[in-house]
Length: 507
Image 1: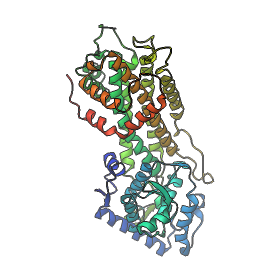
Image 2 (image 1 turned 180 degrees about the vertical axis):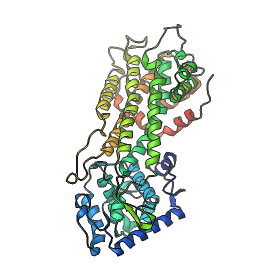
Image 3 (image 1 turned 45 degrees about the vertical axis):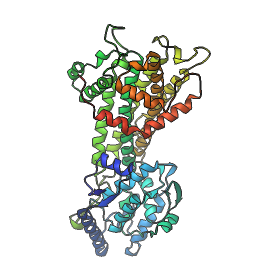
């Protein structure tokens, strides 16, 4: 059980809630803050003070005054009109993360919702009722308005939800579980949709998947080093300590540890003086990707505990300020940075694939084929990897450098952060497939060299992966192998991540 305070979420606790379906509760202190901010809104309405989004229109309509009798209808109209997302829905785990992050932001006590709204979000999480939220339609400023409106619809008993493995109407699921739709009151619709929770939820899922992929890439790199009889000297600690990047040093340390006891690795001058960069520079390139992951984690852990709606209520309602915390630029830039860092894992992986299959670059059977010429072996797997890497180059173009004015030029600079998050997710899926291809090729290479010569750790990894992808004894539909292995990596990420996190330094 995770007790939510509005201030203490970490990526690790989000992982427990969103992937391991840990239940949540609300701290008493946070609920007290929610109650106080709601009382402030009620007083504003009663005193007929003019406050944006409470008794005014939205965006360009901010100068339009709303009668007291219509302030509740204003919120309902807001949600229905803004729920215009399009395209495929976000993955269900992202929808779950969106509920969690919106709830956590509201618990800070600056938003003016009633406790019943927070309690309903808890119920949705703990009952695994997840809104169906279209991915496209957010500019990433004024908040993720369209995606979060689809979340808010579910609180109102409208829209659709994921429930028990199917997509159903919210009203049908509410009837099944005994929930009643909630009628939104003043400020509540705006409080639910003004924020960065779509891009941030997608960003958190991206970081979780990308960090696990980065660890998996080290296992696969170690296999490739054995398959190509790579030179271990390039991973000597003195080299990496001389440069000073802790992430680079850590990658080299983990690779050394994985290869401890291997009879397939070589020393410089033994078979060649130097390896190609894609082997020799694994710590430098992978380490730089880890630097990106560390930066992104820092920004995400600020954002998941941030108040990002507008206006914000302070001093018991005496101070209500319209600002711009909904602007997604910090996450937009972080997601664009993540795209580059993760794409590089595939870029260097594809070059290692080429070295594994190209007979001009190794002494292995051409294209790792069982019968070169008659059978093509891994030839077109390298084509596939090259295609995915090239696609990643287009997806890695920064979304955050773009902006299109909206709301009659009132909202004249936007972040496009949700696009950056979505493209980062697409890159991650491509990277996983490229790494799966490298793994298949590396498995075949070490098999030719002799699996009995592998290090104890890489042999254990080899034996596990061979249960998923058998040896290439003849040409077959390799698409099935790639997808099956990529899915296995996605589902079994924790096992291999944990091993590397707990590694002892190899001397």
